[in-house]
Image 1: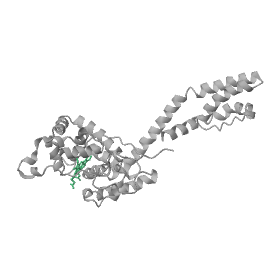
Image 2 (image 1 turned 90 degrees about the vertical axis):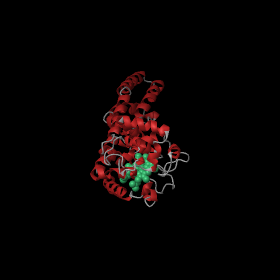
Image 3 (image 1 turned 60 degrees about the vertical axis):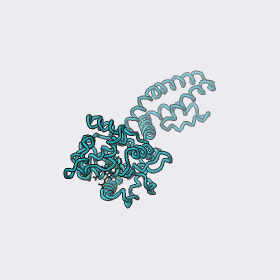
Image 4 (image 1 turned 90 degrees about the horizontal axis):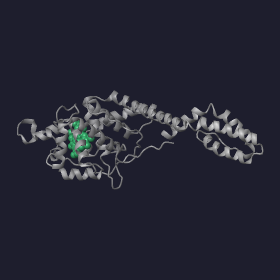
Length: 333
Ligand code: HEM
């Protein structure tokens, strides 16, 4: 988009000037086929080379001097402000990207509620978490649409269906991929529940086939198994611990199920599952409990339990990495 943005903005800005500035050049240079088609950037390139040719092969010095002077004026008028123009065009492209993101956010917010937030966030992990670095397979590509019957994806039909409906409305104004919809929906879910605001870049492509099976971590894994599987997806132990904080949402007993905070880490440190009292023994998945038994994970769990801002910052960065995992991006023309 940025290249297109630069091109068109420059063309727009120059259009009123180019014909008059080039009138002289094209008249005097006709026999040398001054074939400048005057697209956005070309006039500038053509003008500098044709200026020196005009001086060397003209018999009429006064014409060439005058021509050179005019070309100099042209260059000062157009070349010097070029960086500024490019800057403006870059700003245009950024503004367009922000508008596109706002459109998706707007439609997603219409269908999102706190009670649906956990499902939307889980959808992100189950689409992106299939990524394998070694063969660049899986990842954030909308393949979850073809994988809903897999046991690990139980319960995800509903949130996906909601996003498919929202996508239809977005598509009327801006064709968008399912992968982008899911990535933005997860970020909106986090933000709605009081978590960090996460900027999501758009432009992912959807795949037309399911990802390979068995790529998501099983809840029975111990810490070294979890670390290993996350490493294969490009994530450090710190990022594994930060992303696992997503379980603060939902029904696994880590604080308020619709508030995104650092309760997950605080509860992990308390190890309530060791207590025989009532429901506390039900708190957390085996994989959550395993993290706190690992020294390296425990260090991060303690930091995030002490410092919610740090958790938010690290979660935000790890989330951005997650939704970009294995993504194939639209090429701008
Ligand atoms: C570390 C490895 C992970 C394992 C083994 C795992 C496994 C699970 C399991 C078994 C559930 C319960 C589903 C149910 O209630 O039926 C769950 C819930 C959830 N997972 Fe994970 N998960 C992991 C990492 C993640 C990550 C990285 C995210 C997002 C960034 C995530 C987001 C969620 C959310 C939001 C829920 C709550 C869903 C709800 O209550 O509706 N999980 N996870």
